[in-house]
Length: 220
Image 1 (cartoon, rainbow, N blue to C red):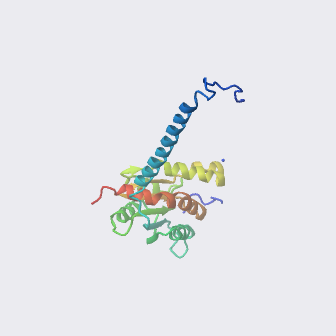
Image 2: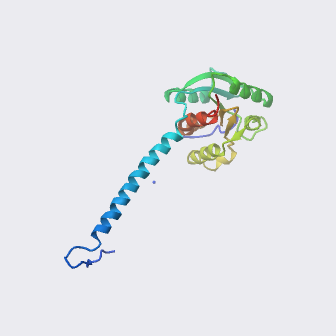
Image 3: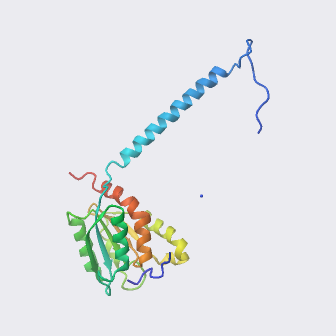
């Protein structure tokens, strides 16, 4: 894994009131009416906001089965710090890793494996690590994006924003990306342990349940 290896680790008030003939403030009742209306309106907004939030997340998949693919021609599952970081972060969040494997830096093999993950019945989300840099053998992004039915540009944008605090302007060489492959959210992270942990802990854990539910919402 050649990419991202160096990734390290908020007037004064008026003095005079207008009174009517009996000494009461002439605007008192009107103000009370306005206050009541505002209170009811605010309360209704709170109810609608709660309902909207519930409806927005009603399709979320709370416990996901996830495929973790490490893209490398030199590592194996026993020597895979980035894959280990992803698996640990996901399992601690209550999800399961149903597939764990290392895939060569090869365009055709990457496409085949990512596509197969989306066809399996025990994979809700795929996460890859490695091959998102700019060296000639970094082909994860090219292979994955050709399979995307929909792209999720916000993932890469947010990942690079979060990474800037750790690696500064070197984020320009990080091509982390995400999209939907046959109803399966697929996230492509850099190959360093810190980058893999950051993207998983800060973005994937929070958003994958929602995205997985939305992606297959119309499925029977």
